Length: 395
Image (cartoon, rainbow, N blue to C red):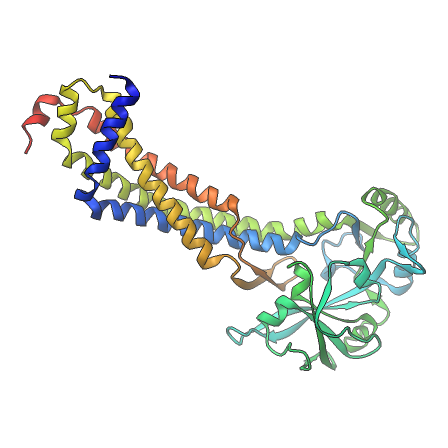
């Protein structure tokens, strides 16, 4: 009898006797499924945050900050310097409009809808060029703000997370009462957490004078970045640094995503130890209930390798079932779930949705299979080493 035939025969015996140990098998499946749910759910939070920070970043856009600043909160330069930046070569133009916008970034307190606790919500002062610079930003409700007034448009994610942002509502921030006139979306990016208003009106509300914190620029092409950067960084009138938008937002997301993933794998590792012990007990039970059958097969000529592989295959199958079950529950329960967290780079809230991707589901399944294999090794080895004579005498 061939080796593969022997494995199939012993594995079929395993399947036929599962009904005798449904309880222990269910414990192993549920334990592994629980680990997969936790792992995929936590990693989907990191994936969702990363997507919110980077999804709308474009290779043909750049950000200009003061030299030494890592983000908008620590940056700052004067109005005349912003005007010089807008004269740099490599900028895209639409008619007479240069696609570069000097912007201001402040934090305001708004209560969360879910808890009522105050949160640092970013309010961005923008210029008319800010919208064609971010061509993915689209108005979906209400109307566009009128520059020179106290009107704001709110990001879609912000309206779902914070109170007082419905069209027609008023909010108090700085020395001004602001009127919400519209809602915009931006491909689920971090911009959807923000409120946008006239930058000059915001300067007055917060007594910032003629100052800005960043310039968001849209380039003629990604290849224009070097020309744009070199002109600015070598200009003796300026003291600025230039970063590609994609690189900037990836850097902004690293701290939080690394922390979440570390915590996720740490929790999953601890839970995985318990799941492995559950798989070991399940497979030891499986071996003990089939001691005489295994010994009989060995006496009939089945080799030890076929017995070992068949036990491992059963453990592998239970783990696969747990991994698939856990992945499905994680997808149904968490994919698209919206929440917000602190971006520790800017100390502002970022609203995002959990993203259970095919890659995360595959990672969860692989993790489940690894637990199954580890949990089945010792029982499989015991089954393969059973003394035939003594095993045949067992009841």
